[in-house]
Length: 364
Ligand code: MRU
Image 1 (cartoon, helix red, strand yellow):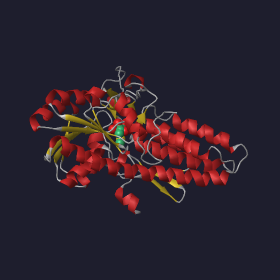
Image 2 (cartoon, protein in one colour; image 1 turned 180 degrees about the horizontal axis):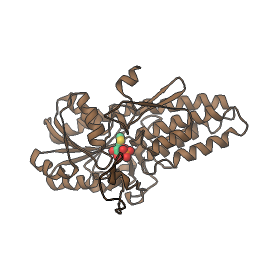
Image 3 (spheres, rainbow, N blue to C red; image 1 turned 60 degrees about the vertical axis):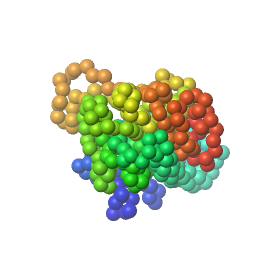
Image 4 (tube, rainbow, N blue to C red; image 1 turned 90 degrees about the horizontal axis):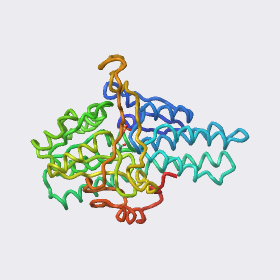
């Protein structure tokens, strides 16, 4: 087993091949699948073998490398690669990191007519996206802890999280779970309550798996228990990730985040959204323009082959919602922290310089 497999990295690139940890099977099985072409990577994103906004972007970037490797020897290879990029772009609609990573990869190889040189450039570029994501998460972890200390002291704080915004959803360490990991190391976390996150169970299957492996005190709850627990357990911080943040600070994240933010405001808990700037889409003026993915009703009606509901029952299954900026106390990015985000503060944030692999701020 490689060190990456031992750590259970979601995305592994090794000797020109892509390995994805099959998150559909966790926590029962830790199983890696190998990918050799871009359409298969696109299908893996659609089917949620790999999921979580930054991890999807990283997998897609490697998908572009696989595409160039497959086609570069043939005449007209660029057209085939463009078709693959389009296929990757269509794999999931909400997380803008996917579009950001594909735009970045396309711009890296745009001027390169020599196939083997394009391949070398693309591989270097995808590895850089992957490594920068992990670095950004570690930076956001410490910025998040500093912000918690500044606003509400050393605690120790009771926190709540929703979905999985951890190492499994990113290049490593995690966004929301990065802050939670750093808070635990800093001694300012009492425990974290984890919403199970119906219907795909990212909380009970993935977040619980990550946190318990590291002995971080974590307690699972049904989504519907959140209001009761926030009040009864004195939750002071709700810490979540994001899939796309609009230019006014509205943030799309896993379905249920919006409701959780309302509960937090009612009970005097603060809401922290942790996301790299590759998740920020400055081309959308508000969250109303963010495309919300609808997935099959079977996610609610069945678990595996077992029918849980009534065959044929009409189902609404939007898998993301938008939390309005006015309910967000802090937006933590690798470029810095924004208190009560709004359009002006978002522009100022994006104008800050923090190296080549901070987000471009456009969905291209
Ligand atoms: O449908 P998923 O599992 O891809 O949704 C993931 C989330 O909503 C995460 O909270 C978000 O991508 C942030 S991950 C760092």
